[in-house]
Length: 228
Image (cartoon, rainbow, N blue to C red; front, side, top):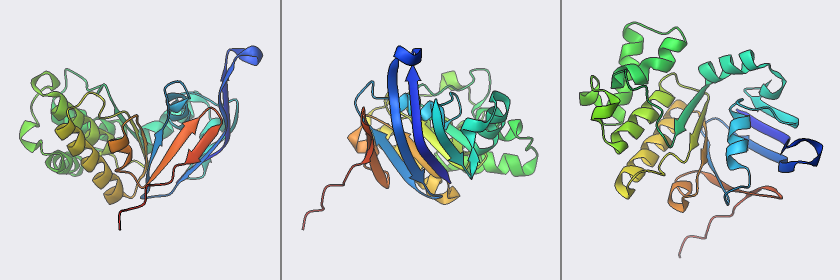
């Protein structure tokens, strides 16, 4: 589903700082991985490159076999709209749209409307426990409720790739646990590839594999052995 090959990225020209140096990552359909690491090692840069929001100096980013690094900005935008879903720490809900219209926005942008789209929105709002808030505006929701709407929106169009950037950073432990469970369950249900960038050990532990990004590259982090 997602394959990152020998990804290189520097900022500041020839004399600038190298942020990513030969990063490689593969995520299969139905797999959910976490990327952890100290601030400044390039986690957000890597996520932006995978999302096609930035372009690498060299290397490949293959989504369903298509190299995003070789596409122009317009083509990358089309791929993002159709095949990716994003969950951000800051929610990024549109304040003038109701909950249901926020969730349905990716469907509308991809030309999906009518009963099937409405049913998908209802299913997702039910899954995140907000079916009764469909007509509410974002300002009427709590932080945890807004993040649940953001998760539902990211998954509405059944994206091939789900990217989550610190999705629980502003939430209390109970809401954080709920968001993480919803995100994992929906990624598995839709057979999507999921990538979570986080500083939270608890969040990372909900994924299938944990990678640590350092200045020397991306390495699989062994899980602690279960007690006998």
